[in-house]
Length: 201
Image (tube, rainbow, N blue to C red):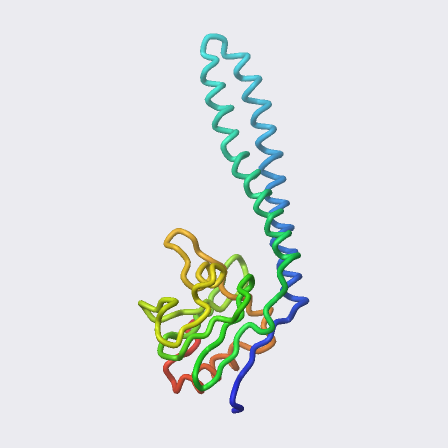
């Protein structure tokens, strides 16, 4: 094997996946808005029929407005994400392996994340949001200031590689977006890490 192994990105697939996620979000939001409007119409009619117990209808109206605010927030986040995609180019590669380290290209991070092999467990191959993804796994206790680590202090890198307890990401990239098969990535991981890192399923 050469001195490095590079896994590139299939730009057309990344863009297709982005469009699919955006379309699903819009359709789901539109359905929630439609059903909420029907529910509000029925709740208003029920409020008029309840007479002295009108407050029950008002409680129903308030309960129906809660998911509507969540959908509006989702639409705003989608619009912000679309603007961010337009202003941010894809990294030159998804990952690069050398005898010294694993380098990860992460969307929104201006520089790659460099992880020496002792800091890397490998990747976990699983399904998230309906697609197969590779989730990068770091050794416990790895921080931006760990020896040999660079680029991990970037906000986009931390959000992807060290997500919070309640916020889970969808992985680095979907497997279809990578120009190398998972088997080749696993083989390269084992080779360059001297067997300490691998793809787990």
